[in-house]
Image (cartoon, rainbow, N blue to C red; front, side, top):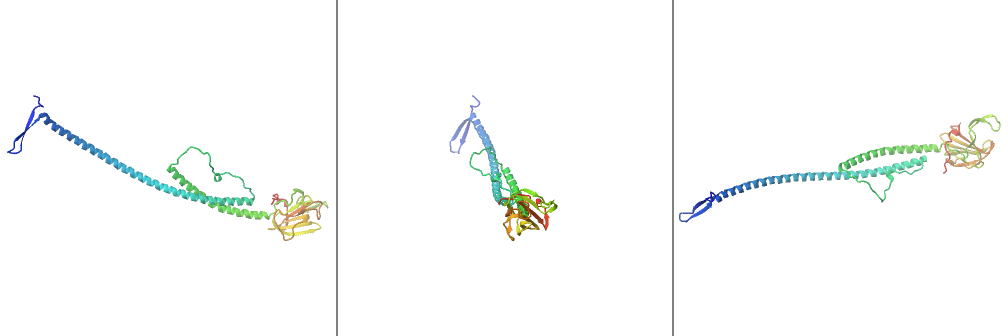
Length: 325
């Protein structure tokens, strides 16, 4: 008989009056049961070990997920704060741009006034500030600006705007001072005899020593003779007040203008006088007509300039042509 096939008999007696019960178990079954129990025990241990390990991994993953979620929420909150700050910065930049635009308008206005004062014509200029974009084809490679770069750009732009605004604030008073200086200079220029009193540029006799056209002797000539045609217009060389409008044997029809600051001009040998004493005249205004009256050899204008009663060479003052009104 095989050793495993041998059987064990178990006798069970429940009490003294009960019958005896016999149970027969083979040695194989007897060995199988502990083996199964052992296997179950090992399996249970392995299951518990795996379950514990899995539970630890799950808890670790949950902790990592929680930490990642918290970090993400923190980063999201920081980004929201950054976006809010950038929006506020952009709004501030927009307000600064409006302020700068207004200041630029004021500066351009001052610039235009200065150009008008000094007689500079406005020219066409092209800049990015006055280019108007219109609908149409567009293109180019797209580059996204990183958040750090955008934040840096906003800060740099704010600093640039601030610096430019300070420069503009400093520039405007200088322009105002320049404007006042130009106005003062223009006022001085208006009362300074700088223009030719005739359309003709034919100088027939200079200021200073000369041979008298009648006596042929060396004499002093107190002005400048400008030849022309009878009836040619004679212009006031500067703003002023008529102090003399008369006719005599030597000077013929003659006019004197007081320009202030000790400056006077005189116009002799006119064929006609068009102003009276006390009249206020403007630079370039017609005050008479060229002629040949008085001590004269032919149609011309004898033009004099005096400073504080002393004769001056008119040639040193005649710098510009008369401008049409």
